[in-house]
Length: 117
Image (cartoon, rainbow, N blue to C red; front, top):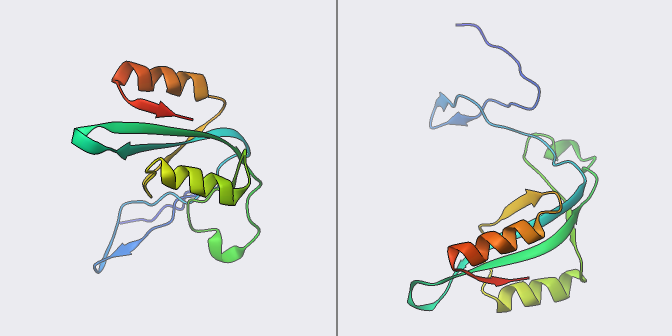
């Protein structure tokens, strides 16, 4: 068996075996939307959407083998985290690249989610 090196793909060892592939890269700087689908009462969900700016990649060598993104919310971090927590935001989120806020709001309305920006 031969091994091929692909930029950005790092083999990972899991339970003594090598997994097929693991992506390691930085996210391109620019506008994005931080999205979270938060569970609510009586089997409801809220779609929490926050416009953010993706910043330049880190220069730390120890971070180069991970998927990474440094983002800046449109409000100070403490205010962002407080509002996010009050809305029920969870630790499982998605970073949607580009200026996609209106499209995500439309999706939330179509899906019947309470959409919070």
